[in-house]
Amino acid sequence: MTVGKRPRRPPTAQQFVLEEIRRAITSGELRPGDPIRQDALAEELGVSRVPLREALKILEGEGLVTYQVHRGYGVVSLSMADLREVYLIREILEAEAVRRAVGEVTDADVERLEDIQRGVERAADAGDVAEMAAANRLLHFTLFECSGMPRLVRHIRLLWEATEAYRSLYYSDHENRQLVNHEHRAVLAALRDRDADKAIASLDEHRAHAVSALELVFAEETAADPRQ
Image 1 (cartoon, rainbow, N blue to C red):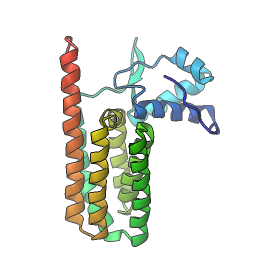
Image 2: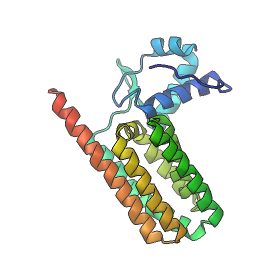
Image 3: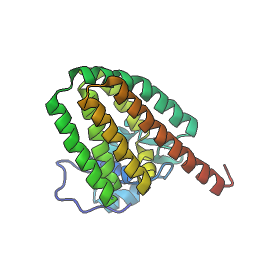
């Protein structure tokens, strides 16, 4: 893991470590199943083991990393069946969030979403996977929060956390990044028209394409690893 140049260090060592590990996971620098070498990572980040352990426990609670006895921490690794289940539950919950949001969204909200989407597109064009993942997350949750249903949004956020490590696998492909932007634009167009059914259908298609792409990644990795 290579520590990126950062304009300023967050206020605490724990927060610093959290941000660095999240960045490494969302950028694909740490991939699903990769072990997290605590001694080496603490030395690289210039922190003691204490804030590192605290950060890893938080990330474990979020579903980004997992702990196994005698093996330690590693980036969470899911099966394709797990991913399909998560995306199916997301489809159900996000449909309700979007339907409610369409009834509440204002022109100012749509303008803000448009501005966030421009950030997604800039990151996609630059090939900055970590920045695109962050902007994409902000776009989706800004929309969900327009529903005025914070409990529902919290449940959706937990599901997102469970598959965060896989987002970089999807965004690493240029065509996938362009497809994401096209699909986001379709959702925004539906929001401008206050068309809930169209917005939900566009998001369903958006998720389905991600699952299909990840199925190909899983198939390729299984074929390359004779142990699977």
